[in-house]
Length: 387
Ligand SMILES: NC(=O)C1=CN([C@@H]2O[C@H](COP(=O)(O)OP(=O)(O)OC[C@H]3O[C@@H](n4cnc5c(N)ncnc54)[C@H](O)[C@@H]3O)[C@@H](O)[C@H]2O)C=CC1
Ligand SMILES: O=C(O)CCC(=O)C(=O)O
Image (tube, rainbow, N blue to C red; front, side, top):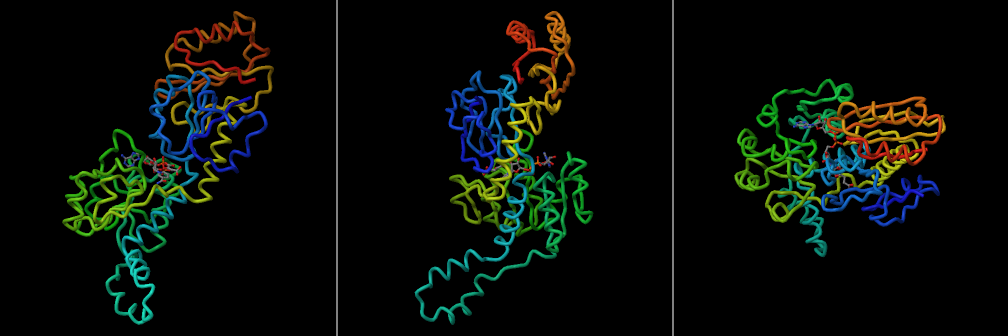
């Protein structure tokens, strides 16, 4: 039985994909697999039972990736599975920041008992007039799964779009409308754009990336949309720029005591991925990744171990080894197998930074003494008999 613990609500259409070999009611302590959305895992212990964590979503800043790698816990995410939901949220908030639909709706709510509301409407509405987004310039910082969808959608809405992503993947580049102006200096976006939306991961290198220097370059009345993570924008200084009018509106999906009380901030309670479709997509992708890992040892969409795939095991046994990416580990593994007269029928190995992963298909079941021997090799982190 494989024990699964869900730290957050995971859509049932995903959990339903687990067969009777999985117990989805496990405690965290007994879990072999953890499914998570935004729950913070940095202060949780990583038990020896744990082999995989799947983030049903994109951002993994709530998971201690390095400690997991060091403990042989493979962490997955679900790239692109919630991107359309966030794209739609960005478009909606761009419109809300341009047309005072929220103020107008509140006015109706406040005047709902006025028998003459139809007449007063025509007088009141001028207070809620706004501007159109067509013809305006949008800067998209980060052209991954979400950024590219936002950029393309904004083009179809008649905006002029600037995109910035120094690590743009070939796949993302191919999906991007040719009308998006790809800039190599992010300052061009700060100087030129009326709307700026950020879609990068929260990393040490991206924290505070939209700060004083960026605000100083912007035009008066700039709208900033942050549906990525609060730490990307310097929220200690943005209040001053909202007061001065340099920034007209700061949309954030990550309210905190500072922004929730900030005039000019339009805050939402982390709703970007909260659509039924995104929740289903993420749950299905996460469970499929976990099942392929547990049942076949294959790794796809990990954020701390390399991709590695040997398909479905057709030999007597398969062993998976998480290890350090250092010399001689693989030769020691193969000689331990040879010494025990176990033949390696096929093998896959891949590395990612300091860590590596090997899958070995064997002609016979290795006995426990070989597994113990493998586990004791210097540089080996975790050994799992997959079949
Ligand atoms: N509000 C919400 O509910 C959601 C928020 N997110 C957030 O959005 C972020 C982006 O999500 P995806 O587009 O799915 O991820 P992604 O991994 O597909 O795209 C991220 C892009 O950022 C680029 N990038 C990295 N550093 C950069 C830098 N310094 N400057 C410019 N570009 C840089 C990468 O090259 C990549 O193309 C996630 O990391 C997460 O924090 C994601 C989904 C839902
Ligand atoms: O699961 C959620 O609602 C949060 C989604 C998110 O922030 C992400 O995928 O990075």
